[in-house]
Amino acid sequence: MYPTIRRTAQQTSSDFDDLSLYQTQFEFMSVGERLIRINQRIKNTGNRKPNDGDQVERCSMVYFSVETKQVTEARHLIIALCKDKLIFMRIKPIQHSTMMQVELFVKVSVVQRVKELMKLRFHH
Image: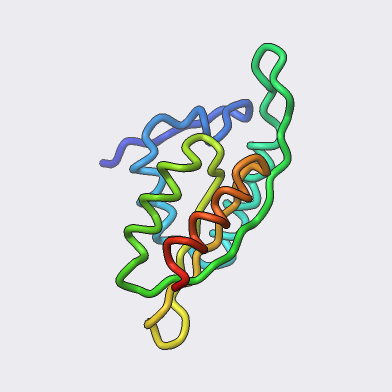
């Protein structure tokens, strides 16, 4: 029938190559399961061993709101600015879907730049 994906206990989400399949599975989870999976991804990120001499960098949550019609542009800007410093991004509708709340979990080194960019670009 369907191919089964077997993961060993030592593998983390970063070892899982087929990210599109992972995201598809994520869509069908309940809210509780999503939160458990997000918390596990955060723990996995914190447990990774740094590369040759790299310092382990702390992470922080950043919250802001944008108009619904600007959310795609905001998403692209964040991804371009943060690159590998972005751990996860969640976007959810607020105020009867006229605004979108963006929640970011990013490394501390980019927090100030993200805040400045969002303030300049989306808050008139």
